[in-house]
Figure 1 (tube, helix red, strand yellow):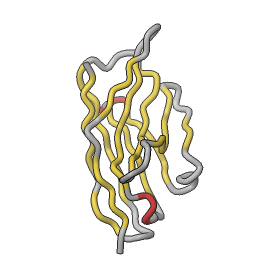
Figure 2 (cartoon, helix red, strand yellow):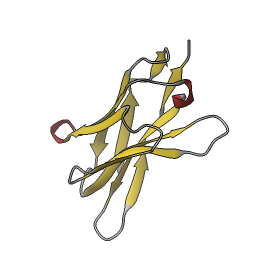
Figure 3 (cartoon, helix red, strand yellow):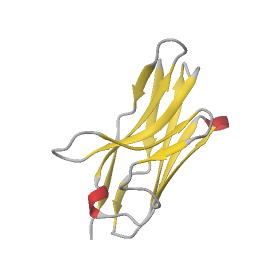
Figure 4 (cartoon, rainbow, N blue to C red):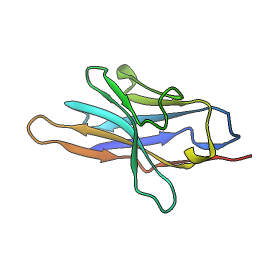
Length: 118
């Protein structure tokens, strides 16, 4: 079983920056991808960014050029650097991990709140 713990959320003014972290523990084998999703009130959960085991990344169009995803394999930690934050970035951000060989399993963290407001 995989356990994911996010940290780094908070309140920031428009134009500010935050860095989210997600530390994985437990049965961390055969990781395929790690990523960040977010869910704003009244909206569906959406992909923000993800990174494959090979290091390939992809981003939602709304965050391209502002957010950057990275991982530290030695620390089993995933990061999301968020710059030039906008009020519409306000959401609960969830860390996710997909692992497996023939059958894939997705694990989720508990989420961390990011609020962008003046």
